[in-house]
Image 1 (cartoon, rainbow, N blue to C red):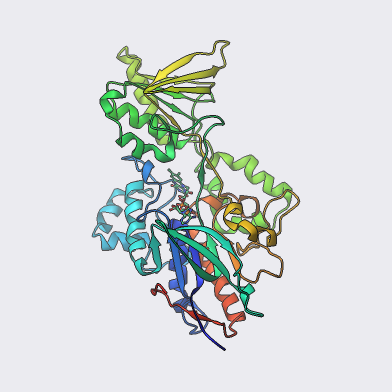
Image 2 (image 1 turned 45 degrees about the vertical axis):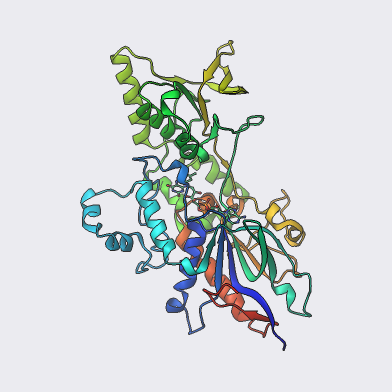
Length: 448
Ligand SMILES: Cc1cc2nc3c(=O)[nH]c(=O)nc-3n(C[C@H](O)[C@H](O)[C@H](O)COP(=O)(O)OP(=O)(O)OC[C@H]3O[C@@H](n4cnc5c(N)ncnc54)[C@H](O)[C@@H]3O)c2cc1C
């Protein structure tokens, strides 16, 4: 069979956040755990950020993880992985001190350092500063083989190129959500832009600031503003009466167990609905107890001192934001009959995220992907999109599977197990289609 100089991988990952980093580890560790001596699959990951970064704009000092350090990239799948959080602590010569600290929840800054450390181990398998702009079937179809591959269009600066993949792992992350009609700019920010936009301001010019939302990010930014801007008036605009606490007690926490994925996936509509009905307060629009108490303490201290620098506008929503030069006027809808207005120097919308949605990236390929009666993608238990037979290539989702796999879809809790399941499935498919291909394979580490 003839060979063509094409760049082809067993696995291409779109995005290199924690999910695909965890997959890179699972693929890398496969051989030692695997049933035989099959070679490791070739893998390449494309990440549009210039270097590894995990929600960098929310790495506020003292903010902590919302999962145990043991729910790292690998431990639940492989407790002796060299990419565990404990390995990282050991490599950083901080294991003893970490244990002395007696805390299951490291700061986000420390977890970020751990992720960067793990990502550095895959420098040969990830291309930073590259964005995948589309996936399609190859234009020139080699009889009987081409449908087992897809082409991915990769953009890097003004250059574009194409790579081929037998399996694709889409892991492009959550999508920041702004209220309808509100545009972000240099004074109006989404929380996902926070530290970057904040760093471009002169703090002394921020005399009045507002934060919209009642979730974890909103509470953290409110606290940050209050502490960092001692001269500023800080408004927290919240739709509820007060912040609601995140339930991380042991029974409720079981919904993030690996086993809960099966219960959800193979459950009935009613049981799936029960997950959301009873346990939404484990993660959505809720705040860690410690942050709530910390904020309330500040608010109470203000009262004691006769100050009013931190104000909570409860049962209130933003109706409109009007911008003119440096001026920002915010119209509010409050439970009282009035519609107050605020003039602010900056306003942060900590209004959450939409789940990952692969449709745009899939483009024309989407017509091969089957959907359920509600129009959502059908996803197999191994996280592979269910497709018509024409598409032999495996397209896997890491994220955007709340409707099939439950609450852990966008979280770190089940990463290690999920990545292991995906790696296993990809490797199994590779064994099935071991037939000779008309392409030149590019091994891990080569750029083709
Ligand atoms: C502030 C914050 C704190 C959080 N804390 C926790 C926590 O403590 N515990 C928890 O379980 N969950 C937490 N989460 C949830 C969060 O979804 C996960 O932590 C995690 O980021 C999921 O990893 P991911 O790799 O799926 O997505 P992401 O981390 O979002 O990574 C996706 C990556 O894909 C890249 N990308 C996107 N499109 C393309 C493209 N077309 N081409 C190339 N690259 C692309 C992006 O640049 C990004 O780096 C938090 C979320 C936020 C916003």
